[in-house]
Image 1: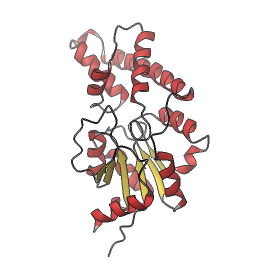
Image 2: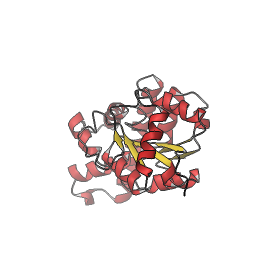
Image 3: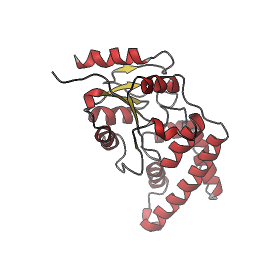
Length: 242
């Protein structure tokens, strides 16, 4: 009989490890102001735009919505402009994180440490950029944060964004484990769809931006990880592999 014991935890970042979306929103609006643009995204609009995975993809989607006559600017000029907005946004986000504007969600670090102590592997599967991951985890864990993770998949390694399973498939491969020995952690419908498409049982911890999403197919949906320990995860995981 194949071994299906839990061997690894794979975490999404934005909204899952930390409530980052309000800080991302403020950073986008800062970038628009820096560029002299009249765009201002409010919470309802940004909540809708989060259905599009990836910051540049979100910008491109919104540009096409408000500027349907795309011929007014060349494709390369548009990509350059989106790239510049995203650079400014990323810098603003990193500055906010470094100033302490974001902390890990309840229970996240405790569960990670418990898993590491028990010999499990940790991985990250996100659509965000490497600099965003580093800013968050360096501030939350310390300069050696990378040592906690066997593998990291992000926007630079997985260009096809969630709900496509590319980043999760990459992490399963990097961990050298079958999907049946891993658990994914997500906060959104797109993330859940990506993880389950890769064959991963998934724990969902919604936040204020994703509470309205459909989480059908999740192994468990819990408010956060503050009341979750490794033994519970192992029991939940075993219950769906019997």
